[in-house]
Length: 243
Image 1 (tube, rainbow, N blue to C red):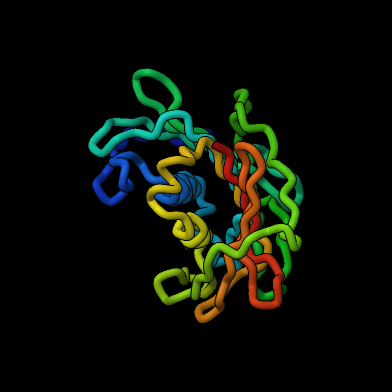
Image 2: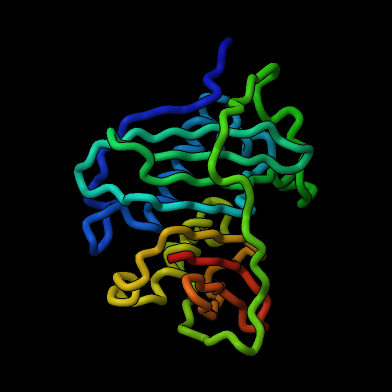
């Protein structure tokens, strides 16, 4: 059986996907890319449900998304995603949104697979179909920026209590819920002024229902380094916003 090494689908930006600017939201872009990844993985036999039947679970390690032009509600777009050839314990997946005028957004996510019984990372040698030919086209996002944990120079912007709507089937905070909580610390006026061009998130320690997370930030020039931290100051999520 020949498996497609790139998943391509046509979409219309729905009302539930746009923010106050009537454009595809930042958080909603993370959700869209996650759903695209699972749709392609389902074709390849390694989606979330398939892996859980084997006692395995996909983990998002890092995600970086570049926003070129955010599409408006009702706009027709083409979505593309494809995995890169994995190392023994990590694999990357690329994403792209386009319209007739070119690239709208691009993203890259680093993934790993957790063995739920052993509670350690599982090797990836048999995750993808045998003899699967990985797509090797050039891609603009090659790596992830280094983001360090907050120090005393960071400001606590707000706190967020993890609630039931944040929890996924793994019984921890869904990876996109972190992005929603992080961006929710900014007002509409702040987000209008910032005009975010790139978001990188690095997942450190899972949060669970009832955890209280502090959003800490520090801005220098066109970059804000920030994150969500537990009450003992241990990071749950590290992030970088570029304007």
